[in-house]
Image 1 (tube, rainbow, N blue to C red):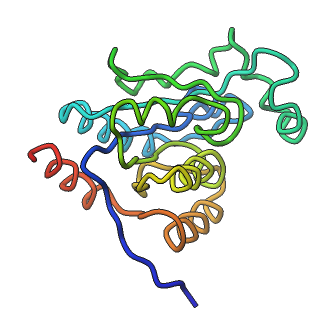
Image 2 (image 1 turned 180 degrees about the vertical axis):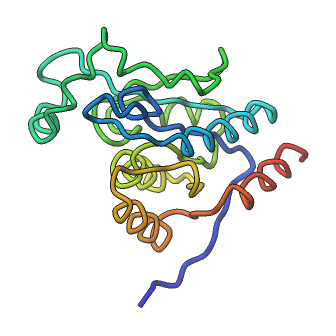
Amino acid sequence: MDLQRNSLGLGRRPALVIVDMIKGFTDPACPLGSDCPEVVAANAILLEAFHDAGMPVYFTTVVYHEESQARVFRERIPSLNVLTPDSEWVQLDERLDRHSSDELVEKQWASAFHQTDLDRRLRARGVDSIVVTGLTTSGCVRATAVDGLQYDYRVVIPREAVGDRNARAHEANLFDLHAKYVDVMGLEELLPLLAAIARD
């Protein structure tokens, strides 16, 4: 039986957190990657909406500078070792139009909050809620979304703007996240909310 829950939506000052839309995850030539043009396209739509509204945007990438960083995680998933500073795989997907005002958060673990300064950056700009997108639903998106809640942000995940290598894992995690932690909604519902906040 599902828990009783309230839909919280967004606050008055939302930010977009685009998780790991880097070449290593969006290019199937990389051992970590998958072919997900529809996810890239949905992120491009959201990115334009946030830019048009003057709302803050944060991209994340994963980079390992030394062997000791996330040692156990990389031992578990050896393909992560391709994400080095000199690799093309850590670069943002060029199909996404990053503006000079968009911030980049470098991380080593699944969550964009874990051992990064993302929370401090969000607080400095008065952010009270986050839209979390990117790859993958069952991994870094989920970890970031749950941590977002644990840092007391309202969290929204737009269904079309997240993806996973495994379709069943994608659906199961969206179901579970919506049941306990975040509001999962479609772009057709989210975009009017953003437009209304921008008008206020």
